[in-house]
Length: 236
Figure 1 (tube, rainbow, N blue to C red):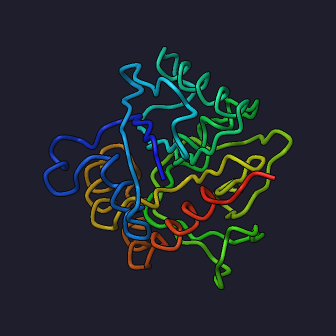
Figure 2: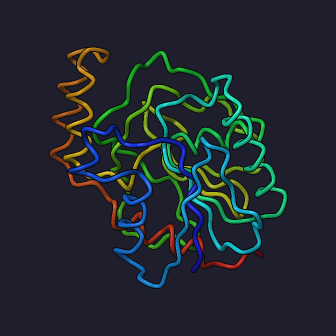
């Protein structure tokens, strides 16, 4: 399987020694369940994109500290590229920022939530199980770090998992796009380091709640399996 990672941000330099950068986190996640992968990284913040989208079986966005509503050329270009993938029914996995970028590309809405920061591990109710999603769980635990949320979904979407805090946590868009508000590629230690680094911008009560939530085990491995199964299924 050939995978193009659309890199939308970098791990802070002070954390890269211990945790690596975002594309490598995604590679490590996917190779934990599938070793026959060819991966190339495209830094979309620098305007780098695959020349021929037909050469790739799957596209994946990283997260980003940017907002999809920021007036940045690279964000507008990314949304345009997502619309091209959509028109050609190419498989795309959107992670956090990418989840929201898909919503904007398809005519939905994203705003900074009045619920504040989502950090730590988010526990979500699984509402439906498509044919590619093999699980016995009724709850999906995934690490999160976000303020923006999708508030309006366009037609042709299926909400797979939700919480009271984030109603559109995991969404399937037609037969070829899948996205999640969380970070299945992050580990708990990285989340903890980032939470502690943001004590000056996140209320202390939310910091404490986020750190306590990290006692849960995230469903990263299972989510990696879902990505591979979604990527391999044929579009009817």
